Image 1 (cartoon, rainbow, N blue to C red):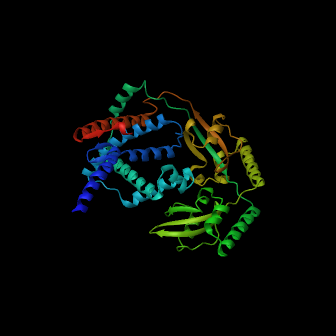
Image 2 (cartoon, helix red, strand yellow):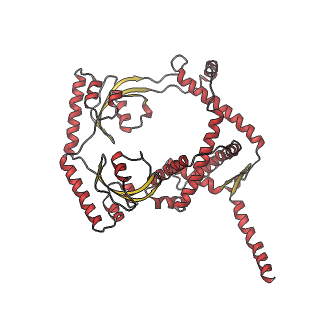
Image 3 (cartoon, rainbow, N blue to C red):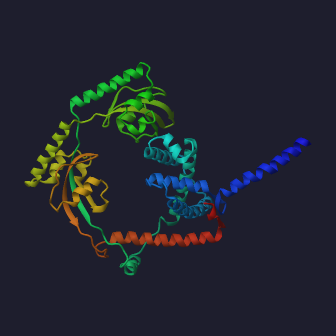
Amino acid sequence: MINKILLILITFLIIPTIAQQLIEGIVGVVGNEIILKTEIEQYVQNYIIQNRINVRNNEKLVKDLMKNTLERLIEQKILLTKAEEDTITIADEILDARVDQRINYMINQVGSESELEKVFGSSMKKIRKDTRTVIKEQLLVEQTRAMNFQGMKISRREVEEFYKQYKDSLPGMPETVEISHILKIVKPSDESLSVAYDKASSILAEIKAGADFETLAEKYSDDKASAKRGGDLGLISRGDFVTEFETAAFQLKDGEISDIVQSQFGFHIIQMIERRGEKIRTRHILIQVLPTPEDEQRVINELNQLRTRALNGEDFSELAMQYSDDENVTKDRGFLGEFETDKLIIPEFKSIVRGLQPGEISEPFRTEFGYHIVLLNKRNAERKISLENDWVKLEEVALNFKMEKEYQKWMEELKKNIPIEIYEDRI
């Protein structure tokens, strides 16, 4: 009897404290779904990492991100309630692939698993679990919204009325450029290949003699991101890496180490860590084959000769077909397409193209892909958007506007039938 009384007293002392902590962690209740402060923090941390935002000593920015995230999560929880009603599900293989992709991306952004654990203040096991929850909810929301609006169409009359009403506030069509290029990849000399292969052979000999693979990866691997993790590349599926690497890796048994494998990145030594169905987890040591300054100068000279030939009247597309190392050249004949000048993804291209006049060809310049010369085929000046010239773009903008309008109406209707309580003072 005394023991039972003690147990009851302890229960009444402890349970309220735990319950109070749990309650204070709840920022909102949407139908049967709760919004936790930790959930908001998880979303915000993901957003900060993905967008490389510096929030140090900026409490206001973090607070604003928390509030904006709360608003998005309210709608998300409403759509999750709708997804449950409509019995929408997400296949495990799709979810697993997205989780792996997100985790690997975040690790690459911060440099290592241990660094990611520091950023989140959690173990990798918990980060993976939380990330899975986040992505599952996002996929359910995407699918729920798509089911209701994917088939929406817009009539010609609606586009014309949209243009008439909003033409003065619609953004103009930005300047665009149409460009072609010839790419030459700097390939190392036979001497460079020999030096790199000898280094890889020496490392493999150390491993066979009993040296620790992870230690050697940290010391020698030219893949600096994975070297910090002892060469660990995480889980991969077929198609994630280059063919030569995957062919060798998928043939290995647990713990087995490959011979030297050559790919476009250099020479690899691969160790199988574990196999999970059709996925494998491996670690590797990469020894890059670095071109010499002489190799680079040879490529620059080749491009200068091609530039001179084109300026003397030879057809640029024919020269591209014959000499370009771009793998798509047989399809596009060197033509890269039309792009908004300010949205050219490769910084070097943006800088070079801005200085060219139509018909001009650049001097050779370097990017992460190799050396290029670029021909500016045409420059289209910035102008106002019009029905006559930009129907496809206007139709897209008008349809998105219509979909967003209908979505907001639908969301307001859903809110009427779902109880919502928010405690903003808890964030």
